[in-house]
Amino acid sequence: MKTLGILLSTAGLAGVGVFALATSAQAAPAASCRGATSIKSAPILRDGRPPTWGSVRLVRDNCSQYWAEITMNPRLTSNQKANAYLVQYGGSNAGRTLSCDSSGGNGAVTAGQRTCRTPKVKSTDGSVTFAAVAREFHNYGSGYTEISENATARDR
Image 1 (spheres, rainbow, N blue to C red):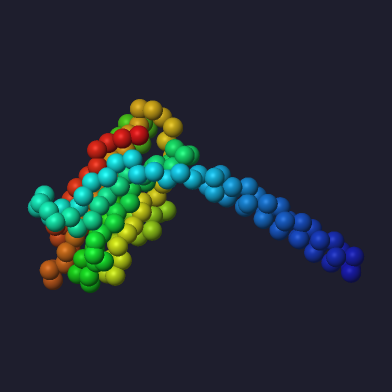
Image 2 (cartoon, rainbow, N blue to C red):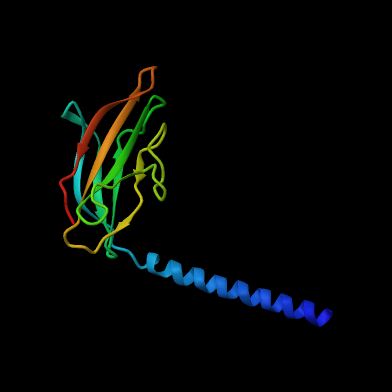
């Protein structure tokens, strides 16, 4: 019985080692996806006029992953929120729109915050383009109302 216990515990440790190696191997491609570059940006304006309240950027890394980021200036107050959206044009997911609130994003910008990011979308299809959209909302007491929106040009 003692031998069986040692054998099972050794097998269990070996399984953990395999799991750890598999996890590291999966994380390796993500770690090598450096070189995030802002390929398009647009200011966030209210009523289409200055001053600028922030910016929205369409970003790509060297692994052909795309995402949208928003940066508000200054930090938002308790009655404000903002969100970035990544819109895909072309390909099998044409029309797909992901926000900072989508799975893989880091959540909309809320009180005390300035930035958020959408999930990353990988695309090597040259016919697929993306745009980043920013929307800012205020709550005047009866729920959030959109007060500004702007988008980058479409790009790859």
